[in-house]
Image (cartoon, rainbow, N blue to C red; front, side):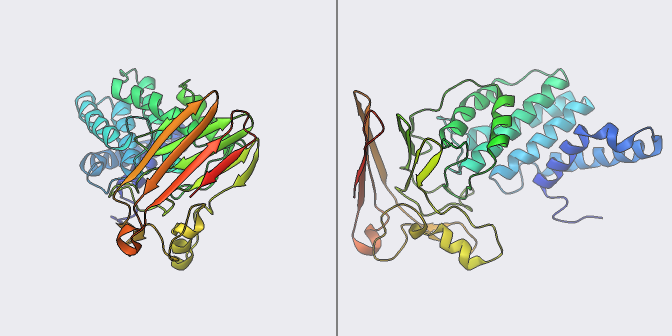
Length: 329
């Protein structure tokens, strides 16, 4: 029987991928069970061929395409696999930016996207298929950005729907990615800056809200920053709310839940009832300078210009030894 949730593209993709991983354990030596599972597996694969890129965008499409590519590779459907990998390349181009950041501008989305891409590569390798250059290059770009968003305790900074996450899981995904690139200091396409010196680490949001299709978990944290010293977090955002209360979710998305300036007791970004961005900054600028190990970033946004006639400008300075952090709004 058809159920919308059970047959949604990302849910089906996750299910067929899990079946592939544990197929022998599921079927054992029971030939009848094996035939039934194979028939269902084929049916779900055909369904994925129809819906993998038709479902709503965001990370869900990568989940669907991971399942589709793995299923077609396991079934030896080379021509269909080729078409699926072309679809995956198009989706990778839409989601993984030139600096390796994910279009959702979220550390959790960054990790999930990398995990799906690594799984897709592993499935292709296990079935002795060639790894597409676009897939490998995306992994090599995305892994350093996962490192970019980690504090000294191994957890994530709290931007755009992310919570700290599980450091052990992050380690496992990075180990499987086998991409040695170090965390960059700047991510201009994703819109973040990273200042690191001594034991201090500062992560600074200098970007516009995510575009439509990737904005369902966006927060109004424009020009917010987080700061940690060693394994201790000193300045943080509130993070995201996972419970059933719409009021609490809205509160955690507001500018007031972030380490940024609040003007007129309002948010720099407003959200629609369906969760997407209704209005926000039209222009966000940033400029970075370094001198003898000291780092300085100046950024502005016009999210309050239409409502209040104001532009927010923020400067952050981190000394070369990491012992002096200064800011100005």
